[in-house]
Amino acid sequence: MRFALPVFALMLSLAGPMLAQQTLPDLAQQGYDLYLQGNVEAARNVFEALLADGVRDSAIYFNLGRAYFDLRDSGRALLNYRRAHDLTPRDPDVNEALAQVRSSRVDILGDETGLIDSLALLTAGILTVEELGWMVLALWAIFFGAAWVYVVRADWQGNLRVPLVTLLAVLLVGLALLGSRLYVTHVRPAAVVIEAVVPAMSGPGEGYLHIYDLHAAAELRILEAHEGWIKFVLPDGRQGWIPADAVEQV
Image 1: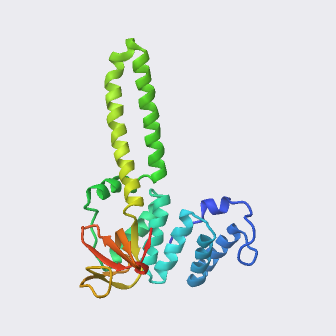
Image 2: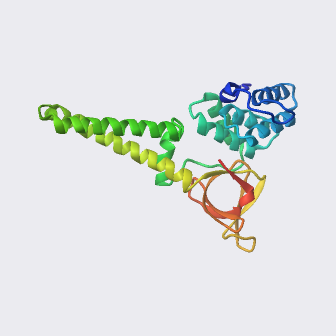
């Protein structure tokens, strides 16, 4: 079983007192030691304290997900694995852990069926939003640099015409991919069901029709919120309303 050390947290210098005057790296190490000793609940509490103190590190999320998985809390396990994945999408251990939870959950969910959601999914397992943004920015700079040369050097125009068209096409694809990622992140944020079972209703309240149940580790996107309820959409396109406290955003 892999147990990751937090790269960024351990690179931090002494960050001031927290929880019995311990530094962030010291507290992280305490969490690993507790986990390896079999005290999973105490390790979970340490990792949660690190996150509450502002640490954002893939390994902390991964280790917290592992602790929740061992405690048979598949919803919070998947939630933290998803958060680790957003920071390190190419990490094979994170991807393996995600597949493990998804294969064991009650609800069978397929791939995203919405056009924008599907487009965002194309790069979600390869690049972070920041990496994709830098790639698009580089393409933008290269294209406009080449365009400037095309304008000022008439003798190069014949050689630059095809590369410019190709660069423009690649740039437009990159902008579409980046736009889809930003759209789903901010307008249709991903969330995970953390309750064991939650009834999906046809409207925002218990007085509406009960249409089906969702179980822990079901993944969805939030469409809107209303008085303690959220409207969601599942990957297969089904929609409904559930209490807001039954899910946590990734």
